[in-house]
Image (cartoon, rainbow, N blue to C red; front, side, top):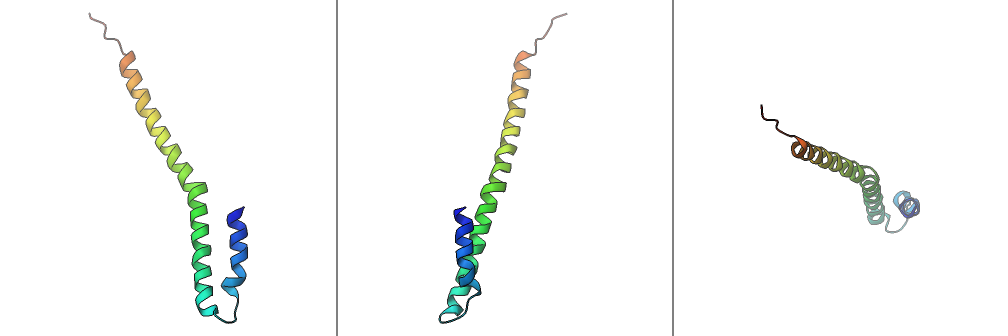
Length: 75
């Protein structure tokens, strides 16, 4: 929500003209891009990495418990 309001607030600065627009428009564009990228990373990439590591750890944990539960029967 905060990111969205900041981006919406920077849009007039990014497309606006006037005094100092040559310096402010590129700065606003970079800030908007950074906010979008960080939001995407936070909402999509980080949970995917977390789930991936969780599945890997569960697989390792299952293999270890199966080895402990394996009983060798002498014949």
